Length: 423
Ligand SMILES: *Cc1c(COP(=O)(O)O)cnc(C)c1O
Image (cartoon, rainbow, N blue to C red):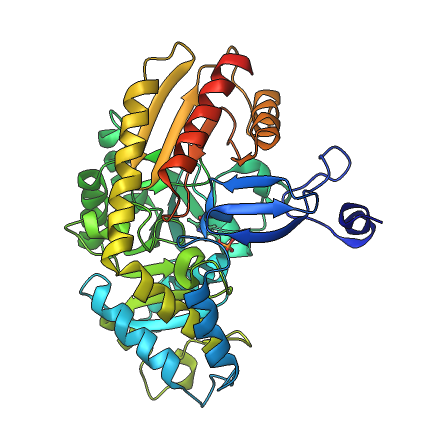
């Protein structure tokens, strides 16, 4: 039996309607920006395997760091114990995070990083004896699939089976060009009319919504409104973190600083599942008390896994090399050149670029749904042509490993252009 036949016996895949979905592709090997399937067909990973992989597949430098850690101390519980990889990683992150971020809490994936942030926002006010239970989030946000993260997410078909079972979340419009004032006014009104504990947002780019972008000035204004009204701000940098926007964090474009940040995806260079939520000293202090009930009673078995920490440290080291910084600039430059070339194509509605992220919206007759027919035709066309791109509705985006070659980028651009002609 082939791997694909064996897969369909027992495996249940994410975001997949197994009755109608095409069979999965069995990947055997990865190197750099390339993947090979069981029939040796080659693919360019143009979306860094769901945005996790900045430095290429099977990266030797990270693999060596992981091996060294695995054969020194693979794991130890983090309740009542600590270890050097977690301490060094915390020190290194504090150096590069926005200045007000002082405390680091570990978990296992983006959703749990968000879950921790939302729980902390709610308990922060509980500990202070204030009743604030509403969370504010953007329309079409995506923050993950656990319960509080789902509640904060606004992509409805992900969450419609669970309506009525969520914590209170109120949505405000994203301050895209022309909609800034409406976003500010709605935020002010929501804060006036509800007891809001926190505002969670994907800074500058909403990934799962289709790489929807907005300006730093607008985000600064939203954060200021929250600050003067004593609403905690949570920057969900699970997607944007570690170079994707051209700076280490999207929040590096901001004047204002958030109260909390969520990190995962590229944190370990796409190798080991790990996540971090970061906090200001003020937030930590609201839990610091003689009273045990004011502690944060949250933890995961694999909290601060040393091997994950070692992978994250190796990953940070790679990100900070001048070669990698040059790669970020190079990929951005190529995207901008392609944008210029393609923006006036009759089938292109809009294009946008930030850092290594490129997005293009295709004109459609009717309003296509997230998983509509055009989307599937495009996806199949890209796969046939050996390029892994997963359009979101009529939006095609590229978010490659930073080490992708110019030749591989040109191939992606060419395949997208061909798709515009023939799909
Ligand atoms: C992917 C993502 C998450 C969820 O992360 P998982 O590791 O898939 O749980 C949360 N927030 C944002 C912005 C993301 O892109």
